[in-house]
Image 1 (tube, rainbow, N blue to C red):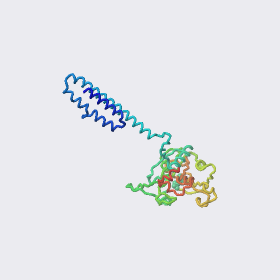
Image 2 (image 1 turned 135 degrees about the horizontal axis):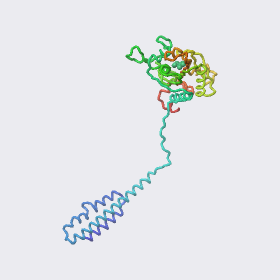
Image 3 (image 1 turned 120 degrees about the vertical axis):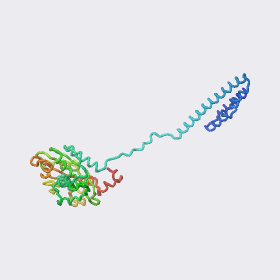
Image 4 (image 1 turned 90 degrees about the horizontal axis):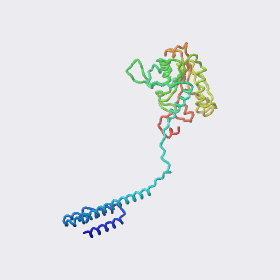
Length: 344
Ligand code: DAH
């Protein structure tokens, strides 16, 4: 019996030696250590032996069993390590390969323009304020000298908001000058503010019109403010936005809420004043309306026009990047076309 055990052990170890994969190893385990193996049979048969034999054979059989189990464990670990080494050799990681860049977002060109103009005016001491897009008829029109039957209402096709408030009509503001009316009513002089925001006109879209666009209005109220302050401020804005060399021109214009009213134009960026299609052969491009705030507008908002003087201006935003980058269709800004937007 002992002889049989020794043979079993050396045969098992020899076979184990030559095994080189996990599957064979498993068959080996079943064969030598499984329920039906000779070793198990010997261990089970111990009871039929004499006491003496049982002691020696039993002890030896258990040693062999432990020995085989240990060898199995070592072999298994060796095989797994070899497998892992072979695997990593095949799939080398090339750490010099550049990573995939994360897409970086950017601000919309209109937002960039609003920010740039905001920076120019805040550096001159203006404060940024905002008002509601859905506005009372009062601030958009009445407070600005544009009563019910005034022809100026026809120049800004209005989107009315249906309300059950009857007497107090609401609309989508047609210009950010509505915020100027609120500021005059709500703030104490001295005032220097700019008012950026969206404005709405009830119009069909084409290359130069969209029903929603952006403006920045501005307002300064203080003692002794004159037209020279208005011109100085807007010259400085044009110089910083369009460059030192760009010529600027003021001409008379009419807006119900200023007196006198002016328009400011810059020399055409395409033809430098010679006249081309963009400037309608005039050599000039209008970029904003402005004027000395009408005394009635100040008075209505609770500011005494005998004590305080004021200038105001309103800039259309979309035209500025259009002029700067030669964009010929305003709808591009709102089409969400990434091929267009990624250029800014
Ligand atoms: N609100 C005018 C418009 O949308 C522009 C404007 C003109 C604003 C003169 C002003 C101003 O503040 O003083 O056409």
